[in-house]
Each structure stands twice: as C-alpha cells, then as structure tokens.
Image 1 (cartoon, rainbow, N blue to C red):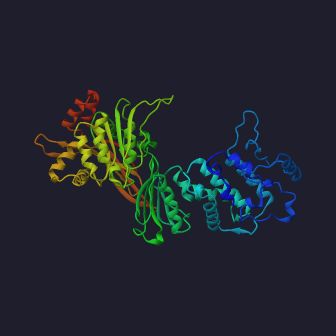
Image 2: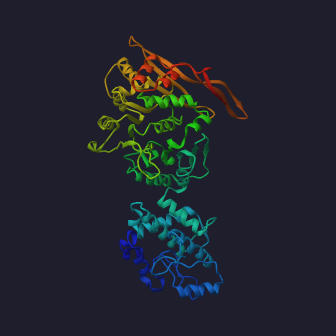
Image 3: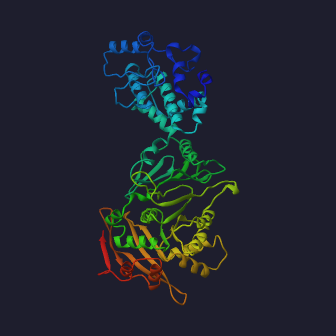
Length: 560
C-alpha cells in the first residue's frame, strides 16, 4: 500500500525524494491507491503522462506538446522534476508550494470533470478524513507545523483529483481549501477568529453561533457546524493548541489559541448532548485603542484618562471594575501603555497572555522593562502554578508596577497584600459599581483567609485608593461611569469620594434603537490625604494643584 511504502521523510523531511518515487509514468500498479479509478479510455493516450499536484511534476517535452495541441497558452508549466521549482525571471520571487499546487489544480479542471456528479461537502470531508487517517495517520496526528499542514493540503488535493470529486457550488480549489480548513484549521470559524474588529464568538450550540463586533453589534451567523460531533471535533482541535483535553472526564475546559485569544468550553453532561458544545472565544486586543479613540467615542474624557494614568505613574494602585464586555480590559491595556519606560512592570495573567507591554525602538531594541508571567494548570499539584504563587514571586523581581490580569478568587488577598507594600498594583474585577467593588474584594479575600469583613475591608480600601467602573449601556456604548477615591480619615474611618461620573440625562427608544444622552462631570477634587501621598511619590507641584481643584465649570464633554 502507498501508506506503507512512504518513509517518515515523506511527511517531515525532503519532499524531493517522494517526487522521484512517485512519478506517475513509473508508478507500479501496487503503489497506486486502492481506491483509484482508471481514466476514461479516450483520454488515456493523450494525457497518459499528465500529472497533478506540486509533488507530481510533468516532463518538459510532454507538457509542451500537450500545451501546444490544446492551444492553451495561458496555462503555466508546473515544477521542474529536478528542482521541484518553476524557473523564474531574474528578480522574481518563487511562488509558494500552495500557489504552485493551485495552478496545477486549475489545469486539472480543464481536462477532467467529476466522475459521479456533485456531492455534498460533509460526505466528501468524511471520506477524505478517513483516507488520510488510514494512509497517513502520522500526518493527521502531527504537530501542526507548517510542513504538516502543507502535506495535508497536498495529499487531500491528490485524493480529490484522483477520484474526480466535485461539490456543487465549489471549484476544485475551493473544495480543497475547505477540506484543509476543516482538518488543519477551525472550519468556518477561522475567518472570524482571525478577522478584523471581532471581540467575541459565542457557540451556543452546534447550529447556533453568534459574533460580537468591537462596536457592540452582535450578529447571528447563518453558518454553523454540521452536527454536534463536528462542533466537538473542531473545539477539541482548538484546545489541543493549549494542551487541554475535552472529554467526559473534563467537560469544562479553559484554553487559549494565542496570546490574545482565550476559550471557555462546556460539553455534555454539563450541556445537553444534542447541543454538542457551548463555547466562548474571546479575542482581546487591549492596545488597539488610543486616548483619542476613548475621547472621540465618548468612553471617557481626556481629564479622566490622564488622572488614572498619573495615579499609576506615581505609585497609586488602581482597580478597574465592570461586568463582562464593559471595556475594563481595554481600558487597562491602554493605561499600561502610558507607564514610563523607566518603570519596571511585572504582569500576571491567567492561562493566556492578553497584554503586550514590551516596547521596541525602530531597530528592534527593547526600550522598557517588562516581565510577563502566566499561570499554569495541571492535574499534578506540584506542576500547578497559580496567581498566588506568581504574586509571591513578583516582590522578588523589584517591580514598580504589578499587573494582575483579573481577580477572580483567593489571589485577591495576595494582590491586596502586595499593594499594601507600596508597589502600585493594577488589576480588573467583575463588579456592578465602585463601592460594590470593595465588597466584592472582601468576599474574594475570604476564600484565602479567615478574617472578619471589617478587617478585610480596611485592607482592601487601603490597598486600592482608586476604583474605576466601566459599563456597557443598553445602546452598546461603553462608558467609564465613575472614578471613585476611598478616603481614609484621621480617625481611621473610610469615606467614598466620587471624583468623576457619567451622568445620564435621557433614555429613549427611537425607531427601535436605544438613545442615551449624558455627560461626564468632575464632581469632587481628590482628597488631601491622596494629594499628600502623590506628592511624596514625586508628582510635580503644578500637576498636583490641578488635581486638587475643580475644573472651571465642573463638567466635560456631553455625549449622546
């Protein structure tokens, strides 16, 4: 069998050897795939030496004769048998193997039609998958490298051509691309995962998929998986990248595709079997926004953004709170880009890296000082690395700013302890308001320590003097709703002091759309205690004076 005779080099090594071994003119009957069919008798003589695919070059003389007889001057010659590359004019760039293969496939469409008429794509996909799994099992279970992906495309294309398979509404090239995407990528989800302006992909069931765009618009896709099993297989391929397994023993899994793409997945028995999987794919690009974008979009005023930035710059810990999709991670990402190059940053993220804080000059040299760390989950307790362990390690790296991607559990206690050492800690948390944020912190800290609520409330308010609350409004606009200071009075009591607020003036529905009108206002200056702390941390006097007084009219831009 063909699969038995291929060496490992055919999959991962020099493809030139396989080219020489598999010229069709010299291939024995034993080496041909068992499923291959004889070409039509009337075509045997004329095209007996015609071969297809980048691994099956055609002899120069034969090709020239056929090209002249057919009168098709526009057809391009295939690769030279010795070099496996087409000669190019001086200065021209050699096309990729995929491009050369595509040219050859178009040539094939001119000479051959489908043998048995059109078929549906799912059945063709299953047939090709079964063939590759049987003949090239090492390839199918490969490491996902570019070489392996190229081999999948090549062998799948050869099978389609050898069996003259067609799918209605798809060219041969489109059919091979579709099969390749299903086997080496993530099917129809691929173009959305790596598309522009997409924040989240929600798989509610195998036949129910939604996409949320950066503008807040959510679109229900007409595309979907072929079956619950198909959905599970695609999601499993995604999780394989992060080394996670989705099965009956682990029906709930968190994973990642890249630094800024994270996946949360549920399968039966957590969800119904006829659903297949429920998955949330989150694409985060926190640095895609600039200060002008926030201001222009009405998210916040320049004064509010500058205030938060200066607080972090001069050693004040800040917690950005909000619900899911409220924009808190986006705001956090921008704030971190304002930290001066001379400040040392230590970031801690859970499982996948969403923050890209390293800055380089025009020559590629690193300008700032950043240490990125990630947690690691493992069934082996000794190999598990959580946020608490990384926070304990952080203080040994002499940081100026510690970034905790998100507080969701007992790591909140370690974070507040780090903040009370004098290091600026910047983090996010799920919460419904500024003052509710502190109560949420207390409940998370209690998962780690057995202390009274009053004691922990004193700790967290001391740790995070500033809380910023983000919210996505009913019209899908994102607003920085409030910046609040927790003032510690001389007698030890706490006073919540709102500094900036977004005040809604009107809500109405117009032609089925929500219209929300409001404005950002400065409602209080900072407290004397916070001003004294900023001065001790080096804030210039003129900047401090500006923060300690109200703006001229107490308000900034009106938005609708």
